[in-house]
Length: 215
Image 1 (cartoon, rainbow, N blue to C red):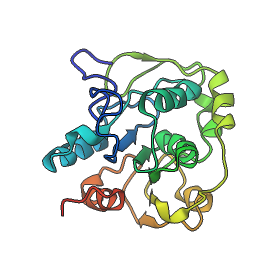
Image 2 (image 1 turned 180 degrees about the vertical axis):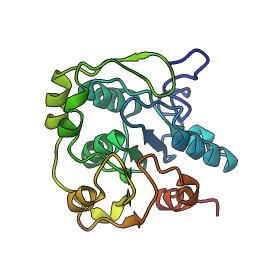
Image 3 (image 1 turned 90 degrees about the vertical axis):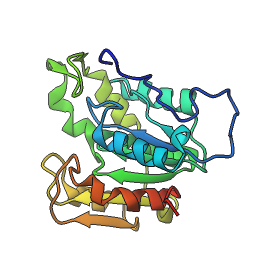
Image 4 (image 1 turned 120 degrees about the vertical axis):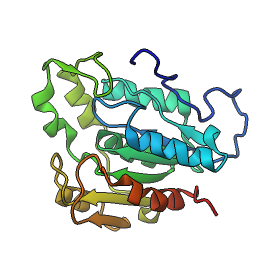
């Protein structure tokens, strides 16, 4: 984490005593590959919840490079519940798929990775840094097996899921996303890009689906 960044388990219950406000739903954002809680989509969601007076219901952990460690962190430190909503972007969407089925949460998928063990194979051993800092990022070969181990079936209750897929995604194939999540309510964007640079046009629908609209 870059100097000056906030706690990696930002907001959302991680600074409250265990069990406090346990009946309040949380919005849990899982960032993508090499990203961080400084993702502009995470910051926009956090800002919108703050406007609603619900800043304490937002969680955005810094996920480690190891997929197994990332899942363990979410289960151990955040422990998603059925009343919570997971919002997963790219690789975070792949994680949210497994976690959503495991924990029974609502799930919002933003250009989710479908076969990351294939797509990330070229990244193994390559010198990389985090997107939002100069901190080194190391992706090791065993992580591909960890990703493969997280593959699971389709959503048990598709109506508790929302897929946002962009035809303009320059990294992942939107057709694979639609094939992976049949029956899931879908916002299919004709253009846009992998990072959803037009997320400001979508954030209201995402929050409304999660039950965090401003009404």
